[in-house]
Length: 588
Ligand SMILES: Cc1cc2nc3c(=O)[nH]c(=O)nc-3n(C[C@H](O)[C@H](O)[C@H](O)COP(=O)(O)OP(=O)(O)OC[C@H]3O[C@@H](n4cnc5c(N)ncnc54)[C@H](O)[C@@H]3O)c2cc1C
Image (cartoon, rainbow, N blue to C red; front, top):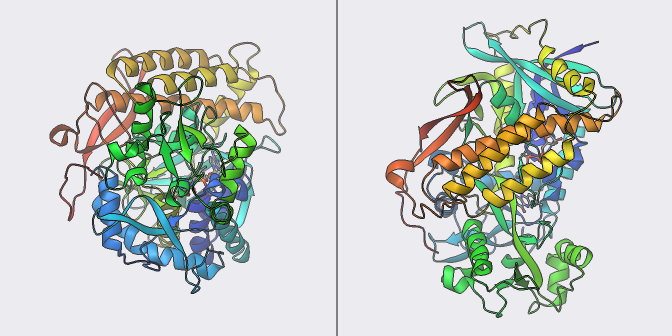
């Protein structure tokens, strides 16, 4: 039995972006939040280092410097109008959280304390600046708990462990392309629920699980990007993936950049502080793309540490243990627990780990989703890591994502409520068989008696992505990756699950998530192959320079069918919005 629900606003995802939106929408309209995880288990809760805003609490700063850093950090692929909005509204975003009760670390005078983070500078690159607000190294946890409390206070309705698997669109009274609602699967019962709403907000987070070595949680499978792509909407700049420099070697578990913000230093096997060679001015606090590439290069050139010379070292031994305990308690515990290393006295083995999707569902600064370079899908909004607005361009600066989810989450909640209240448009009709696609996908997988298992397919996908589409890329590695992915997709058409039951069938949902991952991995690689230049997180060894003449443009990837009737990725491009900053060579 399909159950139908009607709301003004439906928000998909209960991470930072979804709950920040829910606080606004929930006060203004009948709002439901659908989430596949319990809200407080969302990945935002794993964020460590901080959220930046030019508060100028501990040293001189202003939001214009922050905007410049964001644009330069993103290697000029940032839409500058969006970066201006984010950096200007950052200050209120932090103060909003403070008023909600978030326990930020404080200066002795009682102000919100701030620390350094990669690529954040004073006066357009002179020196590192203290811009990141934090709660020890568990800032994301505090944000998520604080937002959840506010949602409870405003009586937002949560549908927990509801997996949204399809987006339904139609036409509104004005003849515009508009959203009708979503189709979801309830994990506890296996039942299908259709949600109709005038406004839908996508806030489903990232897609780190296309890679094997990643800081991302198991659930970050890009569902929101996948359902938008299948619904015919474009995905923007998916080839830009961020590799965070300091994952625990061999594991990928994150050690926040706050470790370097608090004074940590990267060294190679010779003990050399190698970042002095790559970024003479701000050294270890250069943006992540540069640090990750420098580390990988040290390893390639034989200066890696350890028995296999396959990692570098994060040195905190010169810091006072009391300082480490006060500012970096969780991450130093990770080093002890997972690697058996004592950060007070020994350097920690680290290597880049897949961390953040710069690309996603394209939106304008009002968080309205775009169906092409200009047309807005009425009633559909996106915010957070699932979206591409694009404030991060080709490389996100650390602490700019917790900021992004708060600024654009709030905007999405306000816009969604506003659109839902517009009486000139009514609810878009939902087709009788709106659930048919989801039901046939699920029954197809569940009904199959023999075939390919999920885990080996997922592992093979992650391995080829790590080997061929990671920090360094070439035409040959990317083509190899595409061939591998095509083979895996063919095998996936015969995917089978052991659990045939209705209740808590996570086996079945993992199979569905793998379907999204495989399609999105292909979008990443097709975009990377076409982009014959190096910019931000995308580095082509066969095209090492940035090429503004041919590639100063956003990639827009659409799901299409090629001449032979096979499904394929079609690429188009969109201009970058430039306001006050002219592209320059990126030096630190
Ligand atoms: C280990 C780690 C540390 C980080 N540290 C920092 C930091 O210090 N500073 C910083 O700025 N950034 C940091 N980041 C990045 C930042 O935390 C994330 O980009 C951001 O929190 C994403 O928030 P979100 O709301 O978009 O998504 P998430 O918090 O990932 O939430 C996604 C939500 O969507 C729901 N969902 C997903 N798919 C479905 C579906 N099909 N149906 C229903 N619901 C669905 C999930 O249940 C979840 O509630 C870090 C990231 C990681 C992984």
